[in-house]
Image 1 (cartoon, rainbow, N blue to C red):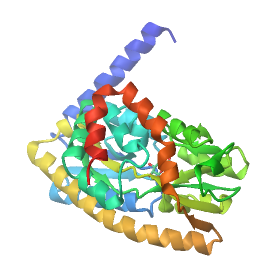
Image 2 (tube, protein in one colour):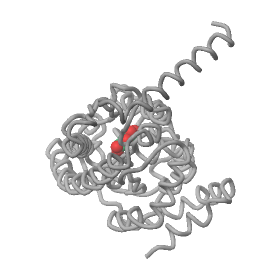
Image 3 (cartoon, helix red, strand yellow):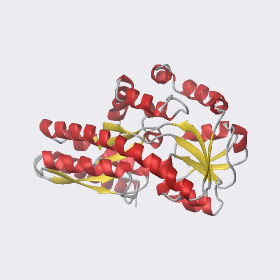
Length: 330
Ligand code: BDP
C-alpha cells in the first residue's frame, strides 16, 4: 500500500472512531474492556463489578463487556487502542504505561513505596492525582488505582538471596526500559517479553526466570516451571482502572459521575479481593512444591538501585519533584 493510501485509510479509521464516540451519549453502546488476566482474578472481578454498576445505575444506557485473558491484544497495544478510543476501558499496570506516560514511570522505580498501605495512601492523594493528570494528557482517564501487591523474582534455577545471585541470569521483565536497567544493575540480563509468552520461555529455558506478584505467579502457572520464589518485593506497581478519554468525554455529566463512582467502588472491592487472593496464591504455590524464601538483606537490593535512580532523574529533570513527593513520603 502506498503511504498516501494508508494515510487516507487511517484518517478514515480515526474519523469513524470519533463519530462512534460522539454518538455514545445519544444511543446505548456496549463498551469494550481489555483485561490481561484470567476470569477468576481480583482485577477481573473488579472490572466485572464496574460494568455491572455502570449498567445498573445508567438504566442500561451504558453497558460493557470485559474481554479477559488478553484476547484484545498485548498490553502495550491495548494502551494505544485505549488512547484512540478503540478499546473503551481496561486495567493497565503502570509499568508498561510508563512508555507512554512519563509520570507513570515514577511508580516503576524500584522500592519507591515503603509498603502497600503507603501505596494506597499516596495513590489516593496528591501524588496519585499528579499521575492521573499525566494519564489524562495522553488520552486516558484514571478511575481508580488497583492493588497489584509487590513483585518478587522467581527462577527455575536457584533462590535469590542477594543481588549477586542474579549474575548471568536471564530474567524476563515487562516492556519498559526502566526494568531493563533495574535487572542489569542487579547483575542479571533483562529480557522484555509479553506476559503471555513467559510460561513457555521459562519452560524451554529461553529465560531463567521472571518477577511478579503472587497472584500472577500462581494464576499463570509460572510456579510450575520456576520453583524458586524469592521475596525481594522490589516493585510495588499500582494498576489503573482506565477509561479512554474519548469514551469518557462522549458521556453526559451524569453518566460521567456514575462511571467515576463505579470506578471508586470497584477499586475498593478489588483491593479487598487482592488481599485474600495473595494469601491463597502463596498457599497454592507452596503446596505445589515451590521453595519460598524471605530476603533478609533487602537493603543490598535497594543500594544496587542507585544507578537506576540517577539515570532516571538525569533523563527526566521535570519529574524530580514528583519522585520526591513519593520517596520522601512517610
Ligand atoms: C501482572 C500485571 C499485568 C502485567 C503482568 C506482567 O497485573 O498487567 O502484564 O504482571 O508481568 O502482575 O506482564
